[in-house]
Length: 111
Image (cartoon, rainbow, N blue to C red):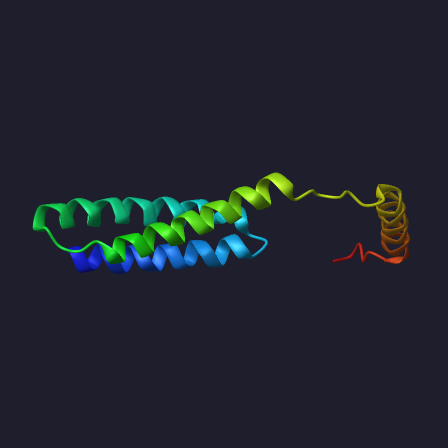
């Protein structure tokens, strides 16, 4: 049981670090929570069995690193909105092109 939660904790902590580094840092919150819960479960099991807690420390350090990166990216990243006039102009041109294409199509009424 302890090994299962250690493995799940490591996998979710590593996944959280990977997601925290990528532009998908907002998705890293779910693996962070999962790794933290697995780490707590392993901590309580280790306390009952009086075993070493070195692996738990590794899980928690990965959780702290990924949480720090996620918070940093959430606070300091700014989203820039491009020139919307060009997008609106493209939409109008596409609409006009679509109307011209539809007007050129002949519909067979005997069908």
